[in-house]
Image (cartoon, rainbow, N blue to C red; front, side, top):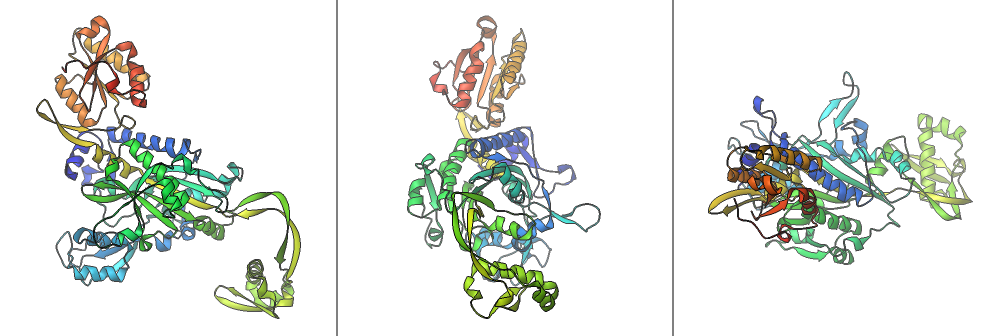
Amino acid sequence: MSRSDLVELAKRRGYFFQSAGAYGGVSGFYTYGPQGATLKANVEDAWRERFGVQEGHREIDAPTVMPEPVFEASGHLDTFDDMLVECPECGASHRADHLIEDETDIEEAESIAIPDVEDLIADHDLQCPDCGAELAGEPVEEFNLMFETSIGPGSSSPGYLRPETAQGIFVEFPQLAEYARNQLPFGITQIGKAYRNEISPRNSLVRTREFTQAELEHFVDPTEDVPDIDRVADVELTLYPADKQEEVEGVEYVTKTVREAVEDGLVHEWVAYYLGVGKQWYESIGVDMDRFRFRQHLSGELAHYAADCWDAEGEIDGDWYELAGFAYRSDYDLSKHDEYSDDDFTVFKQYDEPKVVERATVDPDMSYLGPEFGGAAGEVADALETLAERDRAAFEGDTVTVEVDGEEHEIPTEKTGFAVEEVKETGEHVMPHVVEPSIGIDRAVYAVLVHAYEIDEVEGDERTRLALEPEVAPTFVGVFPLMDKDGMGELARELTDDLRAAGFDATYDDSGNIGRRYRRQDEVGTPFCVTVDYDSLEDHTVTLRERDSTEQVRVPVAALPDLLEDLREGERTFADLDAPAPEQ
């Protein structure tokens, strides 16, 4: 299968296609058709069930536009960049690291510093993919990926379309912690649109400018909370650690269970737990585990917020693509919002019994600080308080030095009101750490379609089918009358309505011969088809056909909903049913 084969099938069968085709199309934006929208929704529902319901986490829905200060605090304004090189002849913009990966044997060029990227472009004589002009000597620059907008009239209130759903969770942490009764650990999930102004979108759903993310932010006490590894201990992981990626010859994976990866210190325990959950989930929606791995980020490609990160990657057309990131974000996000905002992003942890502790305090003499430091007096007082908490020894001399806005200020110790007192504490404020599985829903959909695409033969004829898992297939059952005559059409329509009322995605089709209708549903990925024939009018049975094996059995109409439910839930397999009837 080539990528163009899948794209053609996706457009023809209503899975996805480039948006605004009537106006020439727009790069990086895709519309999901009737089949694709349902497949995508089914994948999202499966994610909610596994990462939300089964893990005991709750979901929110935050705005997609947020004010500029949010992204100043998060670091996205300064660090959310890709490497851009512009063609000197045609003016086309290209992502420099992708050019290197496409035209050389170098992988993960994103982790390479810009000067080295410029050297590689020159050393390999890389050319503009659009016009063939030489790119050697052209500057490689950082390009911020966020879409900017204005909130309200004019430009006085700048905002940005969120580049990740995570910030919508982080900025609401004080309120969300209240809902969780300030008890750690707790998790918040969100599924929604995110936006990145990609330099050169490509590979259909793999890299787009608007996409859907499913993210979980799991807030934990780093000193006490540990995952229940037993729940996924025996899940086997195919790991591609950073040190293995640096080896010159070949690709060497490390295969370990989740428990082994934790015990060997290869993966952080919280990250390893969610790698296990992630593998189970991807397998359940139909991603081929023979084309699936977890790759550790190299130091140069780690996001600004991540202490460690492993990507779930799927093999598509011989290349590996990121499907998800599993990051340990430590307290980066909450501490930044705590610093920049007017709210408290800690959780108060109550002690079992009060503790008597020594606490260093200051009570600065403002009658001295005011005349001495003017408008900076308040900041100097705050700096003295912070220093007392961090370093009591700094107050042992005659003077104390603090830094405010890069400038050092010296204060007589006697003017600081420094003292050490015994106080009774009932608890302490904890800055939670964050564990984040971040799933690209569009990429999951694309991987599912690619891995489900198969070509085989049925009675000597070539057949294209999507071997989609019943859990996510957009149409679960097709219902056909053998012919739309003698009451067969009416019975088939009635049966279709009954199956829909029972909660199945059912479609009615009487167009063309029965074999053509089967092939049409095979290509759409419908797991089962039901045919109403003359016998159905007499004995109230129908033919049930399985997509993958093409085998058929006769089943009573009355038993059909329960039977289909068992097949959908995995309670029974088609092989468990009665002996196959001859194919029609």
